[in-house]
Image (cartoon, rainbow, N blue to C red):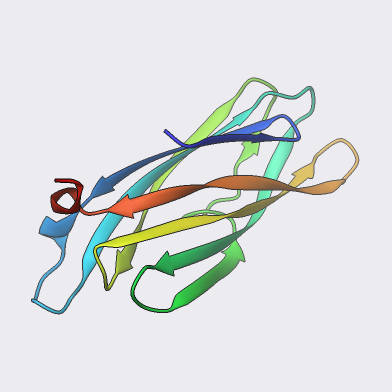
Length: 128
């Protein structure tokens, strides 16, 4: 399970292939991912923005940037965690993602980036 700790914020990623959710022969490959964000620091933090780098192995690279995660900007007290599930549709059956979260320390408004570790998106039949 890919994991990274930046500025006392731990990010853990789990992935799952969701091909049963894609219809049509040319629709591509759907992957779900669960992100767990854990505040291991001494200060309350808020997730403001996300910035994803998506690499579809045989096709183009793309970036996705925006506010929060799945419509939320979670606030995490020390010791708290927040998990969410999202997805990515790729044309090929192999890809990867990584990125950053922009966080804000609630005590003084200091902003900092937290690294989302690189994780692979591989259809199970490619693993044989």
